[in-house]
Image (cartoon, rainbow over all chains, first blue to last red; front, side, top):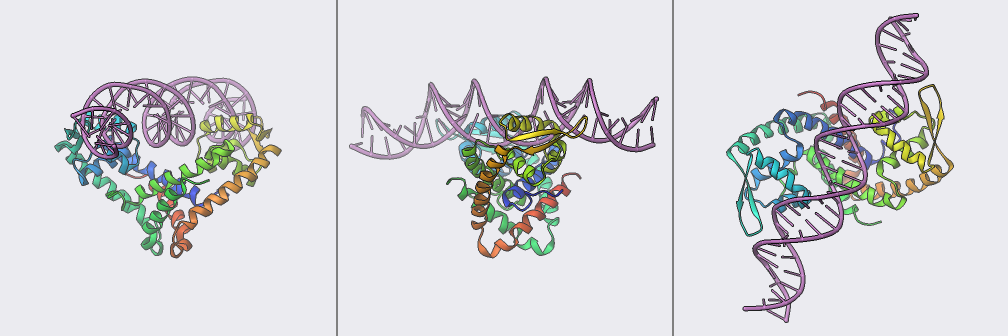
Length: 145
Length: 145
DNA sequence: TAATTCTGTTATCATGCATAACATTAATGC
DNA sequence: GCATTAATGTTATGCATGATAACAGAATTA
């Protein structure tokens, strides 16, 4: 390799994320789901009745970009909408959506475990803390020159 | 927040990477560069004369997707091509490209330092090792069911 | 020499992400 | 109560990144 970028945390973060995503999408394709779909199913399982906008805020997906995602999952009968308001609707997993969610969890749990097991044991204890630290640091660094 | 995905390393990795990339692109826009352009300039500075395909292999960019990147940078006079072979050309930073590269380094170094400083000191020592571990683990996990 | 591999390239498609605009509805300030 | 402001869902659109398939020309190899 001899990649002169390999000592830049931001670059390594991106490569790791990209590879991790590729592996996950590969596994989720068996359920005909994209990772973003899976993340919404998981969110709705934990917070049923949440609004489309709220979900987007939590997952960091623009309001406008939530539309095709929700439509797709609703069209597949995986989620239901219930009017909350004149303008907003609560999102819920349908029975079919819950069934698929358990399959999603099997895939995700297995994958995340595989990912973690690939990290040398001595580093494993601090691994999540490091990732969260970078997340927070990167969020803070978005603005500024 | 209350994000039930926050304990999944893959998800946190993605969010951190996404945020880090946003901040970087924001800073690079002052140089009218995308992060991928910057990464190629940095690579060519370290390994002048490298081939387009080789660069793509190192940066994990498909051969076909290298074409517009190289064309764009060449059109801006930042890189030169020198025929190596009947089929391949070596890529080099032009004088202008080298000048821009130093500016890129200023931006990148400053940004990566900011990113690192946002990580609590006790974690900082192992931070890079953790990122590399996830990178390697994720690469290994791409294949497999 | 023949078969295979590699390079650069074109074309095309899927995905993710950003922005602007809009109508409807809700919340807020006075 | 009414006028202003804010929020929601939506449509449309564009840009950037990646992936795949196909091809011609050149180099390697068997």
